[in-house]
Length: 178
Image (tube, rainbow, N blue to C red):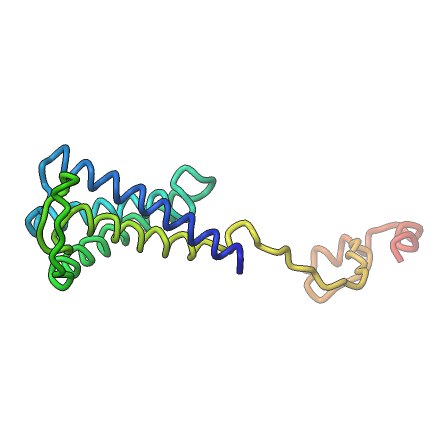
């Protein structure tokens, strides 16, 4: 339980870092404090894409490239959907202009919806990855010792040429085989 809590906190921190970095880049670098729907969808998709590449098993992890690319593509689609949903239904007025992050409905501010999207997805991807590396080896049931066929005794799967070769063995070799 403690491990899951720590993984959740790690996912939350990863998401906040991704979301805040994208929000700062959007507001200060691109001047999009409250982007329109198209740019909000692109920013939300990029937050989901980056969260999918970094959270859980990151893309640079061993044998994780396919999984990370799948998570990134799903994260991008979910990020676009979440940016639309937050812009539509999170309409609480918020003024972040003192920090140069704009003012308006909370769901339309990049400084609010990008960290939310990245945190939710990173948290999900991190918690989904809790069993990686813990694969317990399956214990094989003990087998009875089996005697492997040596070719000296006929079996039902032998062909006629195999039976002829078996008959050609010298008698001492046949006794050895039994």
